[in-house]
Image (tube, rainbow, N blue to C red):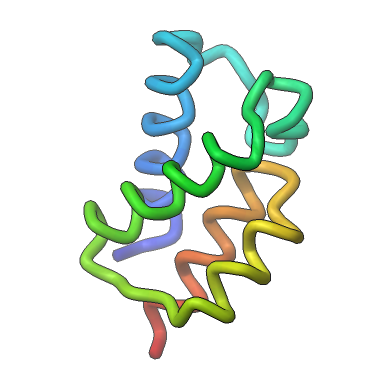
Amino acid sequence: MKEAALRAVVHRYISRLLEGRDDFDDNASLAQLGLDKKDIEDLIFHLEDELGVTAFTVEEDRMLKTARTANDLSRFLLEIGRH
């Protein structure tokens, strides 16, 4: 999947969690948008399923600790998609 398309998927899923609000910047803090650790974990699992990629548990744990923005999630998914 191309980077722009992947970013659009990530943005769309976050927008769903924000109940349709899609006016956020992809560099905005996920916490400031109102997403907690559980929301981010669910988001990662849904995105992996949608994109047909699988991360090792260690990679998912690292992402949960370091994901701060939608762009962080996109970079992570691009990275695991290359495996």
